[in-house]
Length: 133
Ligand SMILES: [Cu+2]
Image 1 (cartoon, protein in one colour):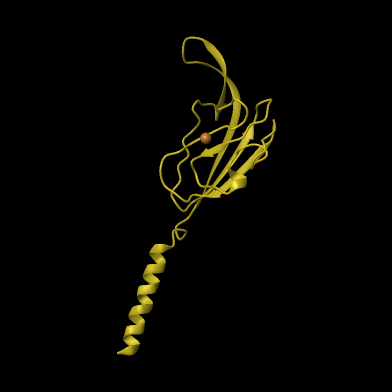
Image 2 (cartoon, rainbow, N blue to C red):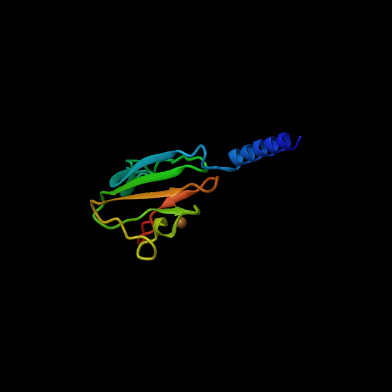
């Protein structure tokens, strides 16, 4: 009887471990973002805008809680830029606030952000450099 109880307890612990481990089904999800200038006309007047992957706003990046986000950002502007992952819980050095916790992405350079997705919800990302916000 004691042996049977131990097997039941072991099975219970295995099941609990299986469902409490949110990294069990974690995937590394990669995106490539490229920041450029582009002439756009939204209001009837053409202006030079900053676009990501040739679109404004930039693309939607979808992850599942537990994934590892790997986001490569290439700066094709002639000035520094960064990406701040607004509201996401990320390691400080991935937060994208230039000279506070992350170095800026210089013109022509690429920075790869990598962090675990620890939450669910809808968030936005934006530059945190000068008035680019
Ligand atoms: Cu923000």
